[in-house]
Amino acid sequence: MKNQQYAAPSPLYAVIDLGSNSFHMLITRLVADGVQTVDKVKRKVRLASGLDDQRNLSEEAIGRGLECLSFFAERLQDIAPENIRIVATATLRIANNADLFLNRAEHILKQPVRLLSGIEEAERIYLGVAHTSECSAQKLVFDIGGASTEIIAGENFNIHHAISLNMGCVTFNQAFFRDGKITDAGFSKAIAEAKSQLLPYIAQYQEFIGQQTLGGSGTMQALAELLMHQSRPAIITLAFMQEVKQQLLSAGAVNNIQIAGLSSERSPVLASGLAILIALFETFEVKTLQLSSGALREGLLYEMLPDMRSQHIRTRTVDSLVERFHIDVAHAERVSQQAMHLFACYASQWQLSNGNLKQLLNCACQLHEVGLLLSYKYHQRHGAYILQHADLPGFDQTERQFIVSLVGLAKGDIPANAMAELAITDTVTARRLLAILRLAIILCRRRKDDVLPQYHTSVDGKMINLCLPSQWLEAHPLISDELLHENEQLTALDLDLTIVC
Image 1 (cartoon, one colour):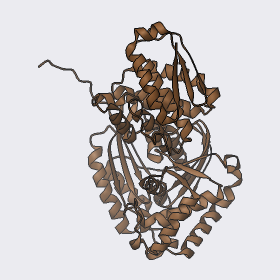
Image 2 (cartoon, one colour):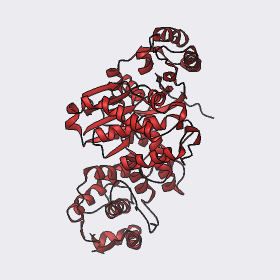
Image 3 (cartoon, helix red, strand yellow):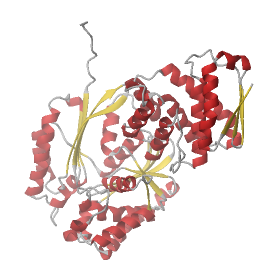
Image 4 (cartoon, one colour):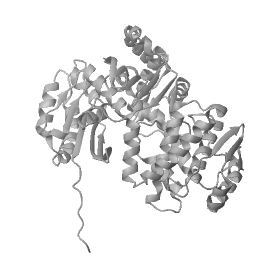
């Protein structure tokens, strides 16, 4: 057997967040310019529940936290100190005996722990969202922690406004849902209290009302999980939150909650977190909220990694997948160029004016062969599975769903319900974009740049007209035959294909 040279693995990076509800440890490394999660550890410490009326942490709560840190310390031994960031947040900001805990924590971890101010926490939450989301537009970012709530407005990596308020799902749980009882009066008081804290800040956020709203804290993740369990788009609305509120009121107590798709660890503080989120929606007139794949930990991580602001997040994500799954770059670009040409030819007649959909189509072109690394047979199914479950920074749930559908149906038989019920666009537009991708792949079947002739193409309603030289069609009988069969498939998309010589 020949000797093989293997590249040394990239260094590990660790971020630890000592939150008011949970302690988190995230360990990653860089792979093909993308971030790969190597390990995650999460413990429900509920530090905030250990605060007494004088804001002193109980020995029991301190003990829970220090025990968790002893688990983390074992994992940190293999990571360079300069690649570690450890921060503490709201509960340790307000606890009178925070120094006692922090000193003991640093002794266990053998690393410094930085106590973030409320504004510092808010800023890093926003950076986590900016690094993992499409961030060119203005946006509002919400984060509901155990003892604080952050509201940040910004654009790109620029933060315009940031506040941190002393209200969280653990502290509100103790104040308004004591002993696990869930009542209408408790909800009303919690929402009113949250609104009273938000009221002084409405004016400075006025220009961001109506903009894209993102969030990634536990309450929002729980609601997104409920939506996905119901096979609904993971887009949170006030109407949906009212549905969940009624289910919680029907339960009457935390121990009685039985909502399909809700994990047991999220149940104890869902009512209090939901009350705060309802107040945020109503105060800032939010229509929809989408889940972000990044928040505080990602903000700390990406700012530690080299050159993370220099490359567009979606480009970095796609390039990383291309390299990791050994996609044929030249062919992916070839298919992309053809798809973009067809898109331009059809855009006016089909009213394809959404720039984001065009960008997502381009990403699907780059990734349509991602499943080939596993096997040729069922490679589209493999590709759809990979994209459904891979980390895709820069793409929200609806965008991921759209790309997965395009890649899964890029070739072969088209089912009758293809591209139906996508949250990102209407079925007609989605089917037209799928047709563009499929035609681009067929036209590039030879996988050579100098094979395609100059050709003309147009659309007239549901009819696609493709004008190719007869000599070229005769010289490429396989492509010619596939175009004929494609006309049969496109009927499932309510489209027709005419080949004109």
